[in-house]
Structures are given as C-alpha cells and as structure tokens.
Length: 90
Image 1 (tube, rainbow, N blue to C red):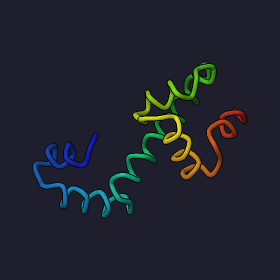
Image 2: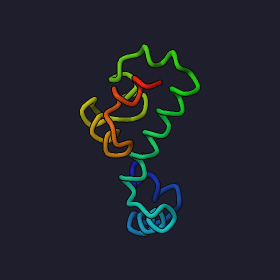
Image 3: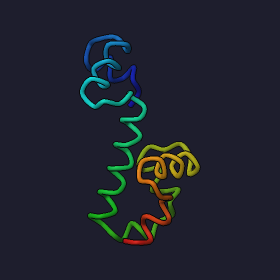
C-alpha cells in the first residue's frame, strides 16, 4: 500500500493522510508500514515455525519488501538484530 492508496481509501489527499498516520502512530507513513511488515512476518513465523525453512528472500517478498537487502536493513533497524540472528533463536 502506498500513501496515495491510503489517501484514496480515506477520500482525502496524501498530506492529510500522512498527518493522520503520524498523529495515530507517532511515525511517518513509511516507517509505520515497514514496522507493520516486520511484525506481520514475525507473527507468521511464530504461528508456523516451518517457515524458518524458507529462504529469507521469499519471506521478505511475502511481507512486501522489494529486496532481501532492504528487508535485512529494515529488520535490523526495527528489531535491533539481523533477521538471521533473530530467527536463529527461535
């Protein structure tokens, strides 16, 4: 989902949609979406540990990341450790 998609869904403009996201979450739209993607992926893996046998690139793609490097970078910034380290503990 893009900010434009959200604005359309709310029948408003992107600037106001961004303002609402920031007021509700305390984050800008992009950071909120990135954190939601990581949370989604972690929840999926916790519900289905067999997903740990899947390559990170496939998991990253399923969570909406455009590349494994972007996924790894965002994951580390959100969780404080790289995905390999985080999921190794599971």
